[in-house]
Image (cartoon, rainbow, N blue to C red; front, side, top):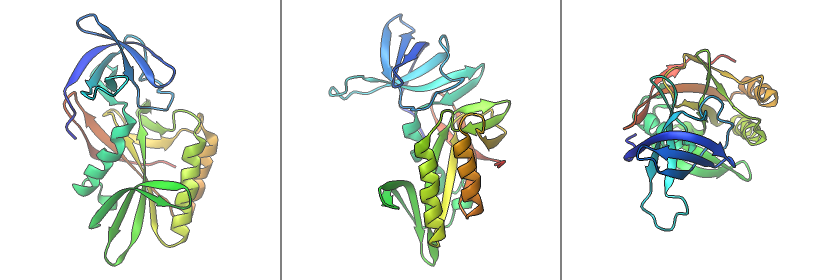
Length: 232
C-alpha cells in the first residue's frame, strides 16, 4: 500500500485518545487526529519521531493524521488502524495470505450475526464463505506481537460472533495485522485482557482460525509480507 506524502515531526503528547500534539520540522506545533483506540503502549512516547499525512478536505476539523512512529531506532510502526483492513485486503487479493487464497470475491463491511459487520467477506464457487476480522497490532514485547494492548470487550464480542458463523458451516478467521517489522511471532496479550485471551482459545477450539502477518513499513509504503507463528 502506497502512503500519501508524509510530513515528519516529533511527538509532544497524545491526549484525549484521538489527538496528538506534534512539532513539525519547521517548528510549527500541530494537532493531529489519531486513528487508534488502543493504549498504544510503546508507540506513543513523547519525543518519538512521527510522520503525519495532510488531507486537503476543507471540511475536516483536523487536516493532519498521525500515520507512523519510530518505536525504536530503525523500526517504523503504522499506527493508523483505518489502514489495516485495506492492507489485509490487498494481501489477500495479491496471494500473500496463503491461508485465505482461492476466493473469487472480496466484500467489505458486510452485516452478519445480528448487529455485527465483518471486515472482509471472501466468497468463491463451491466453498463456504470466509468471514475475516482484521485486528491492527502495534504492541511488540521481546519479539512477540500481542493483541489487544488495552481491555476490549468489543473485540471479545467479535470472537463470539465469528464462532457463530463457524458453527453454521462457514469459515471464520482473525488476521492480526502487525504493522511493524520487528515481530517474530504472535501471542494473545494475556496480562492485558485475560477475558479476550480466554475467549480466543475457546473459539479456536470451535473452529475459528487465527493468522498473523508482519508488515514492512517505510515512510512511502506499508505492505504485509511475512506470516508469523501464532502461539495460543
